[in-house]
Structure formats: C-alpha cells, structure tokens
Length: 264
Image: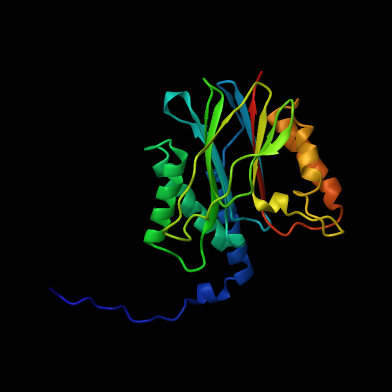
C-alpha cells in the first residue's frame, strides 16, 4: 500500500489575508443563527385536545438552549427541552448534537426514562471535556390526558390547575455527565384547562435589581394566573411579568420556556 502523503503547508492566499475578520465572524454567526432556528419548531402546535407554544431567547445571537415538540405514533405528543452548559456558539453546536441524538432515539421508544438513559449513554461514547446538558423529555397522551416525563437536571415543571399551582416530579443528573446516571419517570393526570410550564434555569434565575430570583418569588404567582389563558397568552403574561420584575437588570443566560395547555 502506498504511504499517505501529507500535503505541504501553504501560506494563506492574499484574498483571505485581505478579507476582514469581522465580516467573516458576522457571516458565520448569521449562518449559525439560521441553522439553530431551523432546529426549533416552526410554529405552535394545536391538535389532539392540546396547545403547545414556546419562547426562545438566547443570551448571545445563538444559545445553548434547545426545544422541540412533535407528534408520535399512536396519537401521542412528544416534547423535549434542554440547556447545554456554557453559552454562545460552542453551546449551540453541542445542543445541535444533543437534538440529533434525541431525534433518533424518540422514534424508537416513547418511554421517557429510557430515552434519557440512551441519550446519556450516547453522549458518553464520545465525551467532550466540560460538556453536558440538562434535558427533560415528556410524552402526553391526549386520549387519557396523562403526562409522563423524565428530568435530567432541569428546573421542575410547574403545573397550574383550577385548584393549585405546584412543582412536578424530581430532578436528575444532567445528560452526558456520569455513566451511572439513572432516571425516573413521573406520570401526572391532567384535566381540561390545566397548563404545564417547562423552562430552563435562565427563566427561573432571572434577577431583579435587588438580586432576587424570578423563580422563587414572582414566577409561581404569575403562572397561577395563567390557568384560564391559552398557551400563547400564558407565555405573553409570564414574559411581561418577567420584564416588569427584572426592570433594568440584563439577563445573564439563555431563556427558554414551553407551555402545554390541555384544551377544554
């Protein structure tokens, strides 16, 4: 077999030398933003007795949060949301990797804890130093109005019903962190008019000028007021409240939220 010949190093062309770096970076960032938005849902979903809407606000031009929802076989609805460690373009690239893996897994199995276990295993097959992500995967059955979900490190979902507003389930280790991680499945019976909020920690940890976190103060009250609102109206109400709460305090992380609303 003929040995592999390495090409000699060449000097950059004069064309590349004269191309402004700022323009190259701007073009690459614009392309990255277009690619990331192509991975997000193109619209809200209103079908099978539910409405799902989302809000995605990256800290930079692109971000490390990701979200998707889709129809599954047998009339089920799947939903996942995640938050990659870090920010900006590196986090975006890792988030795209996670989404690609999830899209392959959820076509084979709708058991939520199995999906997260497989995601964890596949991320650790080729681990990247310092990279992992918090991930939540949920499946809603419109015929029974049951919601099953498993959580790998995201904030607890918030369930608003006619009688109360409460956190759901438990947490778990982030995806791609430890091979020994295991995940539980939580099943919740929903009723007509109920709404569930899934959000990354960027929403929960948003601060007001006094340094108080949104998730531990104003957010539960605002969410309890959304029980009679549509999914889209609920997001508008929540983010209007966030802007009033934070005043002039700038966000310090990506913010992503998804609302699943059971229609009457």
